[in-house]
Image (tube, rainbow, N blue to C red; front, top):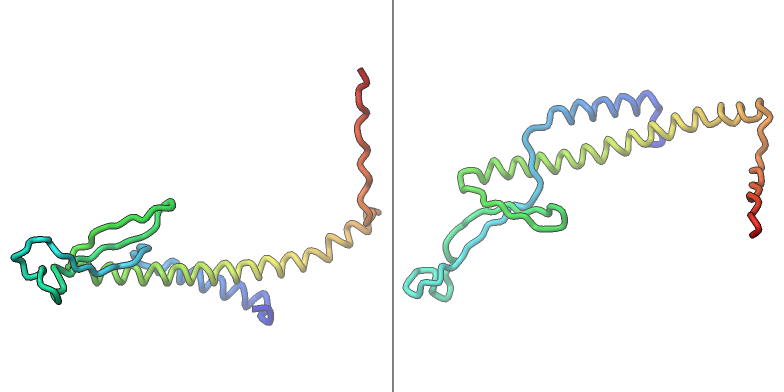
Length: 140
């Protein structure tokens, strides 16, 4: 990014904004496929090599330091996968957008930094900070 001109950076940031607007439904989390045993001794899941009942699907994610699980119906598994993928795409776009924006801000700061140093010299400002005098203390 440092080799890009400010115009290129501005254009790239605008393109990223457009891509962010195009995002669809999204949700964070991990989709987990689970098989369980029901505990009935006569059931097929009770045999030694049985996979169990399932699959059942759940979406897990952290919220305020706790794990939250939501059951996903089998008919919505593919849709949920697309939403999770879209969320990952969102995170990547945001990361890139912030990096480009920070570079633009740094370039502007450097451009205005020379002017502010010139202003200080014109105003007769000193480069050394003034010493602060302590307030007098009351004697009782």
